[in-house]
Length: 201
Image (cartoon, rainbow, N blue to C red):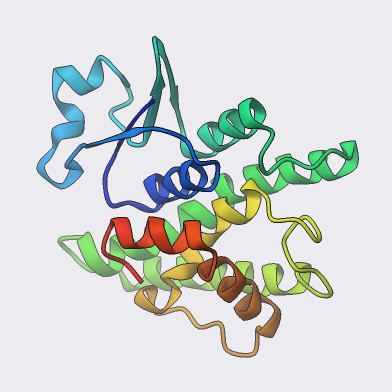
């Protein structure tokens, strides 16, 4: 397998799962800061011009949460067997893609990369992100992981943005459930290896 990616939240998700499953893969960097995702050779792999992309033979999978689900379905890792828990997991994957990811991503954009400031937009996205943090803390009451006692691809999907919460000016103060969850994931050998891959900690 070949993982095309960069030091991004969405690439980190896929890297974490590949390492968890012990997969044999080659990492191919695509420097999105230099615009390499718009080069014809990469657009031939993903016409949307986005990383990550996971290529397995002649088949390519795009969109990070779809890649997580595809790997989990092939390996059996990180998927609950109970149909209700599976339905719950799918809902959380969509929540991450539609709510957590976009709003945390906009905070990163407006605070780090935008050429002009937009305090109103930044405040709005931070407000929603803070509600997300409280929501996740509530969902982790009396639970080790988002879907229950077992670590799943949902935890992997949600973890990277929360791992950098302080860099985004977000606080997890008074969210003990979420803080404990973050520490459980950070301390996993696969998580530590994935974070070290991009020089994070």
